[in-house]
Length: 389
Ligand code: ACO
Image (cartoon, rainbow, N blue to C red):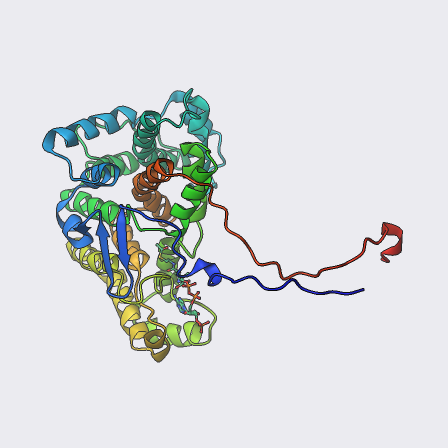
């Protein structure tokens, strides 16, 4: 019996590294120089000046909104923010121990069941669904926090922005100005990032002519993993495990140098320089920690970053802090529960995913790559009774 392998086909880099799968007008990620541009605007400029709503408009229309366009978007978003009694009743049946990312994935998927036009993929319907999904995601995340802690979910307020509404619906208190500013900057920074894994998932699902709810549900499932969006929660858990800035060097030696653990929130497939979003979030999380008089976790994170960046392997492999590293500190300082960090990432990324779905529909072709077969060849059928035990 011969066991030959087929002639190898030309293979892409493992994990599709360096493979260009299409074109986009949404963002440019320059990994060598550590630059990120949304539709022509530097991310630092947007994080400093733009609200999340302005960036949503930019991603969906390719230009910044005028005052009246922004008001219109805000009005449309607010009109879609509340959850129906059916969705709230469904969420109340989930086990209280269910993780927020699993709840978000399932609830976003369930929204489609009450949308008569869920499978209508016209540009108008997809715009409406993008608005609905962007508006309802923060409400779902906040409602789950209330439900699992035996509190009543809160209704969104018309006088608040998306960022402020999320904080209000989560905590039930009046959001503070600095918290809202940091939240807005976070949402702006995380809203779009080229062909990252979850965006790719959303585009693959869309390319099969499936609907927007399915594409966003797919993307949420992909974002959940610790190598992608799940890293912000893992970074905070790592800071807790280290416990104090005094333990950083020993922890690094015992865990990272022995190959037992990675520094969560460091390293990136594209950035071989400092992730520009990490730089912005570093200063924002520092300011937030100073304002709340709780420097412990910021100082620990800063020391771990310094220790890692002085390590010869980290230098050689170009491993720098990524967006998840300091966002963990910023979100923790604002009082977001650790397992809600990744759902927050999803809140930010929904409009970016939707923008990619619009682009995919505008010039669609089924995404279906090839794979190199490396298994056996030429085997002959063996009846089951002759296959041994
Ligand atoms: N800590 C220690 N070593 C690391 C780290 C890290 N955080 N990241 C990569 N390395 C090392 C690997 O061990 C590997 O070393 P080797 O060549 O000696 O085997 C080398 O760097 C390359 O690692 P890969 O996993 O092949 O790099 P890849 O580009 O596939 O992975 C990834 C990128 C997944 C982000 C990786 O850096 C990682 O696991 N980081 C920690 C998790 C994280 O922060 N993820 C969030 C990414 S940003 C985002 O999705 C929003």
